[in-house]
Each structure stands twice: as structure tokens, then as C-alpha cells.
Length: 164
Image 1 (cartoon, rainbow, N blue to C red):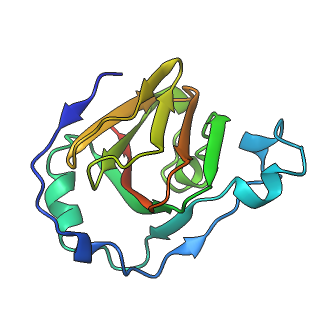
Image 2: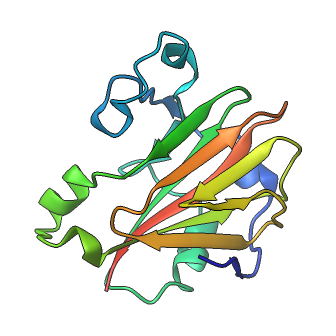
């Protein structure tokens, strides 16, 4: 998946102070193989999602994605937190939207800030570490991917889950 770009229509103040909820992934299905004790503390992502009201910039971003269903969520990955290589399950998304074919799902990660030292994204064997705000990457279905914050600052992304 090559990096693509959209226009930045947001400021840092639009997303840093949202009411994020820490969503640890340790022990959940996508991360079952990461059973070592060390992963308990670091498999985590802080998420701001619907039904919370999305900041106004999100609708502008969604206009760039030409899909029928577009579900946004804003992610904050704190320093030292990772989502190691895994395949998304999309269980609730598929149930809510009556989707039978997992390969019909497209997921995009929009980087809300320029990359900081120690911030990485991986899709299959491709690593990303040098992005600008507004760059995005994506995959379809159950491609392996990971997010790493091995730096000293929060890593902010907008995740968009789509169906044609």
C-alpha cells in the first residue's frame, strides 16, 4: 500500500483534548499469540469513537473517501504502546452493516501530524516512518498490520473503515 495524501483541514487542538478511552488489546483475539507477560502493559491504543460527536474536520476528511459506509475513529497511541502485527476482525462493524465478505472492507489510516521519532506503521512487510500530516495508507480485509509508538510523544491517527 503506497502512501497517499489529502489536504490538512485540522489543527492539533481539534484532536488532542478529546475524551479518549484506553482500549488495551492484550488477551483479545487479534493479539492471541502475544501471550508473554511483557505485552500486558504495552498492547494498547486510546480511542475516540462514535457515538461521541466527531470534530468537524472529520467530515471534510471523509469527503475524500468515495465509499457508501464510512466509519471514523480517532486513535492516540501513547509512548511505549504498540499494536503488534495482527489482522482486524471487524466483528461489530460487520454485524451492524450486515457484511458477509470481510474482503469487501477497506480500512485507511490518516496521519494527523507529521511523524515523530519512534513512530511507525507497518502493513504486511512495508514499514512507514516518515509521513506528513494528511498522508494516509490503507488495506483491504485482513491484511497484517501494526502500529508502534517507540517515541516520546503521542501518535495521532484517524482510522476510517469503509464499504463500497
